[in-house]
Amino acid sequence: MTMKIDPTLRAVADSTRLRIMRLLSAMELAVGELAQVLGQSQPRVSRHVRILCEAGLAERRKEGSWVFLRSAIGETGESPLGAALARLLAVAEGEDADFSARCAEDRRQLAAIRAAREGAAQAYFARHAAQWDQLRLMQGADEPVEAALAAALGVSGDDGQQLGNLLDIGTGTGRMAALFAPHASHVTAFDKSPEMLRIARARVQHLPAGRVDLAQGDFASLPFAGASFDTVLFHQVLHYAQAPEVALAEAARVTREGGRIAIVDFAAHDREELRSEHAHARLGFTDEQMLGLLSDAGFAAEAPVAVAGQQLTVKIWTGRRTASNPVSIEKALSA
Picture 1 (cartoon, rainbow, N blue to C red):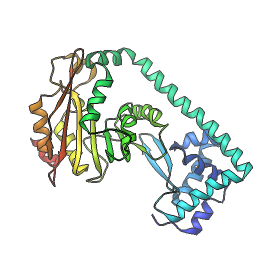
Picture 2 (cartoon, rainbow, N blue to C red):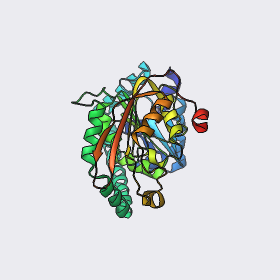
Picture 3 (cartoon, rainbow, N blue to C red):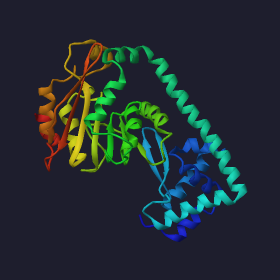
């Protein structure tokens, strides 16, 4: 993005907007959260936000009924002017004692917001403890599945580029996004539920600013451009799909040629209570079903991996994007 000097300088010629930019350098925040930190009314903060966005210094992102704000500049960003401004603000906090004290107080308020997010996440799981425990009992411990998934994707060591640009579809609590963020250049955690995304936000908020983005929407209509991701992950989510072929067609559309897909889900089973009590649309998948789905979507399937649980077996299916054009949504629906 090309920035212009006049609107940039006008936008930062206000102490509140300077504080907002320093806060956004740490993490993405909702306008209401900014108002809480700054001790100002939401309409007044919204005015500051509008000025920053119009100058190209910040960006809005809608997540359900919430609107989040994030910094559009960074010390290593694409815009030289934006990078220079980010460095200037960092230097100013180091040299200007009054500005430094105000920023420190803002960060203390921000820490309270983070604690509140984590508390809300804990309360949510407390309300649903029986359901989560029942599902975990069926599939067994998380660690063996996660280790097998990492091995299937070839993840090892501390290399942050192995997975490239990663899309975690149906991120839920954000466990996979947090687990694989150190091995990806960037992670997009995607889910339909705003409540789950708020829980995921609490889980990933310790990661470096800009490493993980959260996005809301339907996996049957992904809001991303074609060939945007190097790795696409479905972790215990495809069994909720009424038409899994549509979800995989969309996944193929946004996967770069040569990119990877990984699907973690149950092997075919007969536990009907998962359909009636937990909204599962599919009672797992056979290898034949999944390999056919992957092939139709434009992926060359690899050998599946099985991880036996206490009551159900978890399977890991992987594939590599080979076709230049995935199956269309219309074709998937008519299949």
